[in-house]
Image (cartoon, rainbow, N blue to C red; front, side, top):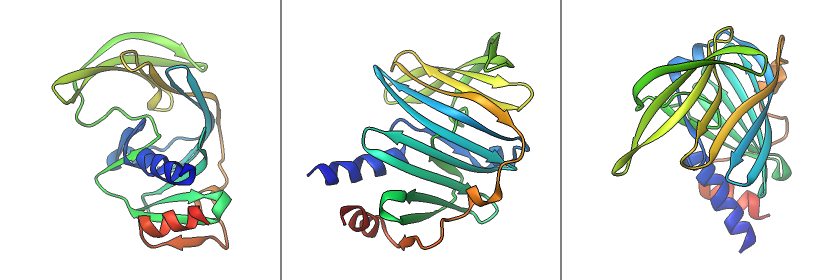
Length: 200
């Protein structure tokens, strides 16, 4: 039963629970950097890492259910979700809107307006507040966009007591190998196949 819950939690993460929207045009970022990633969900804190290079992204995330790696490859139009403990991965097509643990103002956000300027992780940022429609009401979210990197490096939703932030940002060359599949890993052709790999 514990494994089933782990599988459901992993796929839910991919489906957008605790995740933010990522849009293909944003993948044209020219920034190249690595950073620590801190996710706060209520009293829980989950660490991770993010790597960015010319639109390609790699996110390593650890929560109470274990470790997963997500690689976004716009050049190949695919997303790979990798489960290192089971040496398996799931390949999904890169669509117009992709759930992912990468900070990006959701495309459906409305009433975006500049509310201030802050120094975050050593970067001058513009703070924006947006309303994100959902259900019968809108959720207020704040984003801090680093002027130098031209992308958000912090997101916060006080209503849900949720935040996502990049810390210890290191600009510079990111190894190409981080955006490739690890050798010898088994490809799962369906989510059910992925489930089977996790259960082994």
